[in-house]
Amino acid sequence: MDQRIDVFAEYSYGKIALQKIASPEPNFRLYYAGWMGTVNDRNVMKVTGAVFREPTRGPKKGQLSILVPKTQRTAYVTSEEMTAFAAAEAARTGRPTQPVDQTLILDLRERGEEIDWTRPLYQCQICLEQGEDNLHKYLDDCHYFDEDAFLAARSS
Image (cartoon, rainbow, N blue to C red; front, side, top):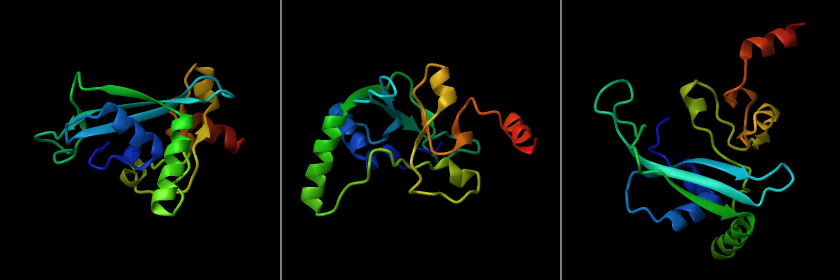
């Protein structure tokens, strides 16, 4: 995915993580954010970023799409920090910040689909069964999703 736009940096957890990581690199981007803990105990979010570079040739030339090895940094952001940050931003700007469960997915544009910026993230049962805590906007965003099996089940 092209990392020219730092999607996670637009949200409270991303802004807090960037403050904690404090990378001086201009091409440092956050690329992962996920709740830690169990379904009913989500108090800490793990946010990971790295430096990305542009390929010198190929179809992704001009895009920040290559993760530079050994540049990954992780910050842990608590729900209390997010709440305090949102309150401070609301007081500073006079308007509320977006909720934590509203995350943008830019790869829809690459698939030629309309982007629904307001769609919430959903907890993925398949990922939970695999021991992962991933959240997805759409069913087919899950890397375990089997489209053929899904369509076969819907047609029967």
